[in-house]
Length: 116
Image 1 (cartoon, one colour):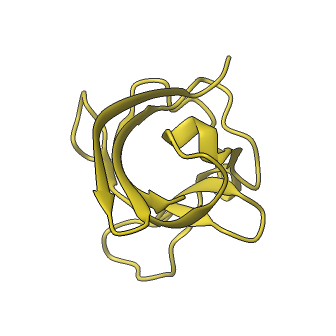
Image 2 (cartoon, helix red, strand yellow; image 1 turned 180 degrees about the vertical axis):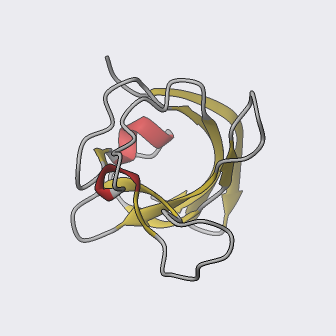
Protein backbone atom coordinates (compact mmCIF):
# COMPACT_ATOMS: atom_id res chain seq x y z
CA UNK A 1 0.00 0.00 0.00
CA UNK A 2 0.97 3.64 -0.10
CA UNK A 3 0.24 6.85 1.72
CA UNK A 4 -2.78 8.80 0.56
CA UNK A 5 -2.77 12.59 0.35
CA UNK A 6 -5.79 14.89 0.44
CA UNK A 7 -5.10 18.59 -0.15
CA UNK A 8 -7.60 20.26 2.18
CA UNK A 9 -6.66 23.91 1.59
CA UNK A 10 -4.34 25.84 -0.74
CA UNK A 11 -2.99 29.31 0.06
CA UNK A 12 -0.27 31.60 -1.21
CA UNK A 13 2.24 33.24 1.12
CA UNK A 14 4.22 35.62 -1.05
CA UNK A 15 6.11 33.49 -3.55
CA UNK A 16 5.47 30.34 -1.50
CA UNK A 17 2.52 27.97 -1.31
CA UNK A 18 1.00 27.05 2.03
CA UNK A 19 -1.06 23.88 1.80
CA UNK A 20 -2.98 21.96 4.42
CA UNK A 21 -2.72 18.25 3.64
CA UNK A 22 -4.29 15.20 5.28
CA UNK A 23 -1.92 12.24 5.03
CA UNK A 24 -3.33 8.78 5.74
CA UNK A 25 -0.71 6.20 6.55
CA UNK A 26 -0.74 2.60 5.37
CA UNK A 27 -0.18 -0.81 6.93
CA UNK A 28 3.49 -1.08 5.99
CA UNK A 29 5.41 1.74 7.69
CA UNK A 30 9.10 1.27 6.73
CA UNK A 31 12.11 1.83 8.98
CA UNK A 32 13.50 5.28 8.22
CA UNK A 33 10.14 6.78 7.26
CA UNK A 34 7.80 7.16 4.31
CA UNK A 35 9.27 8.74 1.18
CA UNK A 36 7.36 11.81 -0.04
CA UNK A 37 7.67 14.27 -2.93
CA UNK A 38 6.68 17.94 -3.24
CA UNK A 39 3.94 16.84 -5.62
CA UNK A 40 2.39 14.69 -2.89
CA UNK A 41 1.75 17.91 -0.96
CA UNK A 42 0.41 19.84 -3.97
CA UNK A 43 3.71 21.69 -4.56
CA UNK A 44 5.70 22.08 -7.77
CA UNK A 45 9.28 21.34 -6.78
CA UNK A 46 10.42 22.25 -3.25
CA UNK A 47 9.30 21.49 0.30
CA UNK A 48 10.52 24.28 2.59
CA UNK A 49 8.89 23.13 5.83
CA UNK A 50 6.33 20.68 7.17
CA UNK A 51 4.53 21.50 10.39
CA UNK A 52 3.75 18.14 11.93
CA UNK A 53 0.85 16.74 13.79
CA UNK A 54 0.18 14.44 16.69
CA UNK A 55 -1.38 11.07 15.87
CA UNK A 56 -3.66 9.60 18.53
CA UNK A 57 -4.88 6.01 18.42
CA UNK A 58 -8.47 6.31 17.14
CA UNK A 59 -9.62 3.27 19.16
CA UNK A 60 -8.01 3.74 22.56
CA UNK A 61 -6.45 7.24 22.55
CA UNK A 62 -3.61 5.60 24.50
CA UNK A 63 -0.97 5.64 21.80
CA UNK A 64 0.22 9.06 20.68
CA UNK A 65 2.82 9.59 17.96
CA UNK A 66 4.34 12.62 16.28
CA UNK A 67 4.98 13.15 12.59
CA UNK A 68 8.21 14.84 11.56
CA UNK A 69 9.62 15.73 8.14
CA UNK A 70 13.17 14.54 7.44
CA UNK A 71 14.23 17.18 4.89
CA UNK A 72 17.56 15.51 4.11
CA UNK A 73 15.98 12.19 3.13
CA UNK A 74 12.59 13.61 2.07
CA UNK A 75 10.58 11.35 4.36
CA UNK A 76 7.79 11.56 6.91
CA UNK A 77 8.97 9.93 10.13
CA UNK A 78 6.60 8.76 12.86
CA UNK A 79 7.98 8.62 16.40
CA UNK A 80 6.71 7.98 19.89
CA UNK A 81 7.70 6.77 23.33
CA UNK A 82 8.37 3.06 23.77
CA UNK A 83 8.22 3.01 27.54
CA UNK A 84 5.82 2.71 30.42
CA UNK A 85 4.42 5.92 31.91
CA UNK A 86 6.70 5.44 34.94
CA UNK A 87 9.85 5.50 32.80
CA UNK A 88 11.24 8.45 30.90
CA UNK A 89 13.03 8.23 27.60
CA UNK A 90 13.48 9.93 24.25
CA UNK A 91 11.05 9.60 21.39
CA UNK A 92 12.09 6.97 18.87
CA UNK A 93 10.84 5.95 15.46
CA UNK A 94 7.91 3.52 15.77
CA UNK A 95 9.68 0.89 13.64
CA UNK A 96 12.40 0.78 16.33
CA UNK A 97 10.06 -0.01 19.24
CA UNK A 98 10.70 -3.24 21.20
CA UNK A 99 7.63 -4.49 19.35
CA UNK A 100 7.87 -2.54 16.07
CA UNK A 101 4.76 -0.74 14.89
CA UNK A 102 4.30 -0.85 11.14
CA UNK A 103 0.51 -0.75 10.70
CA UNK A 104 -0.50 2.91 10.90
CA UNK A 105 -3.45 2.53 8.52
CA UNK A 106 -5.88 3.85 11.15
CA UNK A 107 -3.96 7.15 11.41
CA UNK A 108 -4.34 10.37 9.46
CA UNK A 109 -2.11 13.39 10.07
CA UNK A 110 -3.10 16.94 9.16
CA UNK A 111 0.07 18.72 8.04
CA UNK A 112 0.75 22.29 7.00
CA UNK A 113 3.29 22.31 4.20
CA UNK A 114 5.22 25.36 2.97
CA UNK A 115 7.01 25.21 -0.36
CA UNK A 116 7.24 26.13 -4.00
